[in-house]
Structures are given as structure tokens and as C-alpha cells.
Length: 90
Image 1 (cartoon, rainbow, N blue to C red):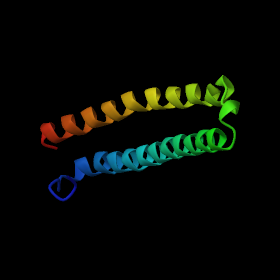
Image 2: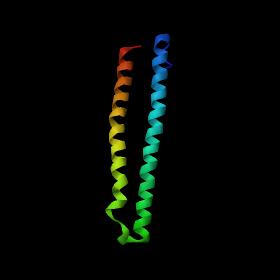
Image 3: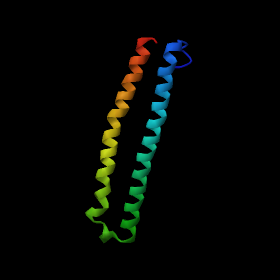
Image 4: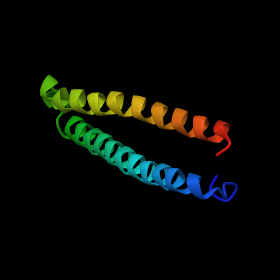
């Protein structure tokens, strides 16, 4: 997008998108890591003692779900902002 856009006025907006993209990748990676760690914990507990799997292992799942559900609208908004920027011809 930046290589097509030589308009100097557009460059700050392109840089803002780049920073937003970097931040969203960081947040997405963190969420994915939390999910993987939780999955490993559950698998380990189930393997070592199948009768020990109780509801308390899933308590943290609600927090992760909340994180994912709050992250999705941010991603959609970001995508919409980029599309509007591209269509504006800046």
C-alpha cells in the first residue's frame, strides 16, 4: 500500500496502520500462546489423572474467550479502516 501511495499526506496514515498491524499481531500471538498453554495444561492433567479433570480447570477458559471476543471486533474495525483508506485513493 505504501509503495503505491506516494502522497506525503497519506504516509502518516500508512505508518499508523503499520503500527496497528504490529500491535494486533502481538495481541493475537499472546492470545494464541495462552490458549496453547491452557490446552497443554488440560492435556497433561487428563493424561496423568483422568479423574482429576474438574470444572476448575476451565475457569481460565472464560477469560480467554473474553479476550478473543474483544479482539475480533478490533480486527474487523482495523480491516474496515484499511479498506476505506484504499478506496479513498489517498
